[in-house]
Image 1 (tube, one colour):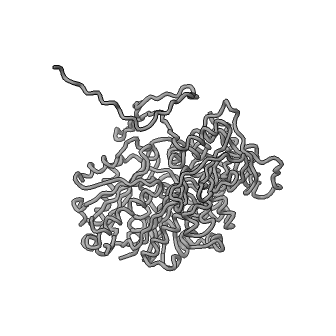
Image 2 (tube, one colour):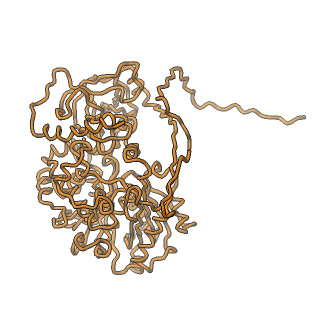
Image 3 (cartoon, chains in turn purple, blue):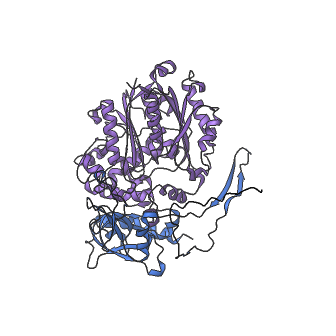
Amino acid sequence: MTKKVCVIGGATTPFDYGPTGFESIEGGAAECIRETREDIPDFSMRDIDLMIYSHFSVHFGHQLCSEWIIHDHLGLVGVPQYRIENGGNTGGSALYAAALAVMSGHHDVVGVCGWETMDSVSQSQGSEFIALASDIRYELLVGGIYPIYYAAMANKWMKDNKVTEADVATIGAKNRNNAMDNAKAQWYRNEHKYITVDDVMNSRLISYPIKKYDCCLMSRGVAFLLICSEEYAKKVNPDGYVTIDGIGLSSCTIRAGDRLNFPGWTERYGKNYPGMTEFGACRSSADQAYKMAGIENPLKDIDFGEIHDAFSTSEAQIYKALYLADENNIAQFLRDESTHMHGQIPMNPGGGLMGYGHPVGATGLMSAIECFYQLSDLIPKKHLSKKTEVPDAECGIVNSHAGTGTSISNFIMRRS
Amino acid sequence: MGEVTIMKKRKKFAEEPNFTEKKSYRPEGVKETGLAFIGHEISEDGNVMNQFLHYDQLYTIRHGENSKFFKGLLEGKILGTRCPKCGDIWVPVRTHCWNLNCNLEKTEWLEMPLTAKVHTWTIAGWSGRSSLKRLPIVLVYAVIGNSNVAIANELHDIEPWNVEFGMPLKIVFKPEEERIGAVTDFHFKPADGWEPSPWNKEKERIQKLVEPVYEWVKTLK
């Protein structure tokens, strides 16, 4: 019998880029934990019996094993620790590892700390560093960076699903506008403006059909999330703890072009799936999480989500992978603004990667933290207003996504 | 009696390759500096300091079992691999079969035709640092011959707004003396006789998005 996994607290530093983001990584980690302690004062650093660190690229920090710097700064010598790295799904994978540690009963209180310092190099150099996580022998050299791979996938997906540029642009506007209610969000701290679908449509071409405002932000930021057993949750945060009822992690090819008819997929989901357009790893990790949490009708059973909107197009592709819509109604689902705050299933009320920011190792944890805030009634305290609170939310989904859909995790969280 | 030194002969586990062809095409001015702090900045209030670190390093990519593919590029050939058990064919190559029923069967090499078909495409208006000056780039994922997978590369000799799903392509190699054994040694071109479809709204939209990119690239130093 496995043990129930709970979330009892968490916080991020403000996400930022450039001159105004100046926390050291260990200072940022300490500040995140101090904020967590303000919410749950009965939590003591002495209770942590495992730390899992979540960090993507040593290229950005030019420091290998930078988790060692954070860990001893936190005073945790002697406490076991290790680091998870899994591209854009680093945060989700670290959360997966923490959940397994608690489920097994071997650990009771697990801290998960993630960070990235992407402003240590220029934007275009940063894009190239991230592209080192594609197959450099075949893709980086032909001018390929991640937005280009995603654009090629999205172009065909949009055609196959009769989705227009304006349809997906609603997502770029939605997440940035949600971020305007969140003082820690990079969009709030930098551009700081409400935008329209026209603004997205008129923004600079990144790679057709993706424009600048269809893309997430490059960020500096740190996040901390506290995972524990239900016994400990009841002791420290009896009224606000959240349970992780379903977890799923899956994988796909590194090169998107290798998915046309991969035997490992066709035997699961039939011929031509996922092709270059669908996220097979998102579907299969959702299948796992839904089954474990008893989700039968995702659109009805889930109230909201914090999902990996690296691009407005990929957020739309994720809706489909999560079974929120299919090829017959995905375009209408977007036109109905189903995932806006006033819609059936709000997505990324916290701002997502396009609004809050995307410091890779911290990103999945940021999503989980925002989901936790919604389910523990902390939004009025953590956001600037109740505008981005999902009223009476009982169940949320957290999604973390890497590569061109190469590693994806999904989590179902519920109010206790 | 003096001390006896026993000389152990180093056991050879594999023959060392004898590298007879060596070429260098390092651009001028590229140097490995190692680690060097090259400057700093301090805020007026004295509270915040940033330091600038420079680091360059030469890497050796050892292609191992994949070597034939990259050597093939130098010779103007696209080599693929095929599983002798299930018959699946790949470019980019796999040296062991992907089908779990084939239990990592070793694949065999074959020369691929220099023809392909567009699976999907995009027009890049932004890229990594080393590609900015080549923008806009038409990048396609295309299926070469009867490969089971698509490979990414640039499509030249076409107005960006004219690219089409499923269009036929040919593979063109750079002149032999310019090849470096990387995928940039070749690119795609529209197949002979291919004609673009008539002007339409989507093409007009793409042209509107792409034109500022041409202007922006002109401003790059």
